[in-house]
Image 1 (cartoon, one colour):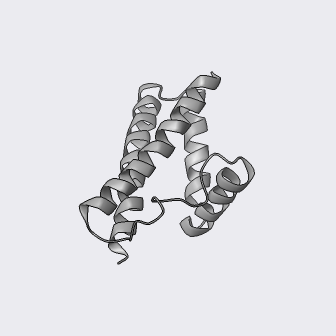
Image 2 (cartoon, rainbow, N blue to C red; image 1 turned 120 degrees about the vertical axis):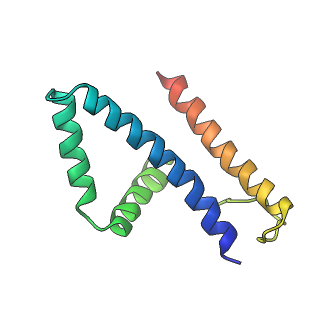
Length: 111
């Protein structure tokens, strides 16, 4: 019963963290001994110090409650029962892609 939720949260988070981490690491390595490298080192050392669950709660509060960038609920459509069926997986992926797509359009539309 919990496996679909675990996979639905774990896979996008791990993929995003891997891509962003590799990109920032490559940029910091390319610009070695610059202000960007020093700033990234300071930021990431600070972010890795607190317990991850505590940092996650603070980020969730900030981005979901204060900024209203992420939804507080609605991981799947009404009437869909959580299970490892193709219908549930497609509904969950549809909702995730809608949230990611809307936020991407919103962020790039502001710049």
